[in-house]
Image (cartoon, rainbow, N blue to C red; front, side):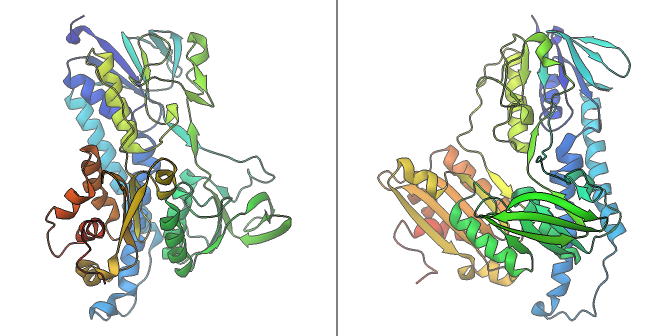
Length: 461
């Protein structure tokens, strides 16, 4: 069938859906996108973009507090929380309107509503009864905040991440349940705004799954900033009156509690396709996620899935790559999804970024060598007054191939792309060490970390 005759329906207008819609339209297909909320999905409206906008405001406040380091005397500042939230909303609105303009320019038909399968080629819009038929269907309906089954979890002062982003006033104190990426980012934002913050994390360290050395270093910095961190804490329940919530937790056999005005539930997200009625057409699911192959195909011919609905690596940029892979296959262009080199970013202060294997993972199957370079030895970091952290390069000892790069420090989330490109091309540590980096930049720390494994770093004893 000629591509200009192929109709493809994409369920979900988030980062798994709208880039796929644009790609399919560019390939010549007739595209319909169905979204029951705002275009841009979780990432643009409730995740990546608004949280980073808030963290930027907290960062500006921190810059003012530390202005005298740079020879600037400030007479103080005042946080206007409503203005902070308005700026966040303005950024979100601008980007979402931009997505709509891009889709409109590509003649993608946008339907606002909730889709459910009628058969393997047809979905029905719940709000209007309209039926939409297509040759191919891509499910990219995203995820929703997770919950834990404990007493008091539905209390009036318990907020999920969406509710945090719609607050109209700053709480004086919060307990954050969950010390993963979402929990730590919210904790640092609120602490930067002047709120007392306690994090309760079930695992031994913050950010489970992160390279342990980096996680331990980050935790020390978070604690030094004034956030109270309690690890190995199993939350048992939430009680108390409004504005004074008691969160009970156990460490081993010992039961303790902490008290706060608000409680933030940040225990991750789970795939959300509950309204689609996928069982009606026999789509296979496992552990709460839709099952796909490396071409992003479900077990039902002509139906694909991408993004958070398939579980796995639930990151925005991965969802986009999966969505594009899916529509390429749907339109006859063979494509295989690879997860070998996927970066992960955390927008804490300092930032964290990583790609490839952690040291713990690498040691299981490789004879490894590790190069480290601290930012205190980097000129640009000193200029920025951001010298905490390091670059850590993990490579195979025999062949020198880079297996993982982990950065804790200034602009880590921007710098990790160099490692992504290098690892995609199977760069060796020698090649990275000998690549000339501009001076003065924080990126020199990557070069010097590699140099420690290739003759020795210049700016380290």
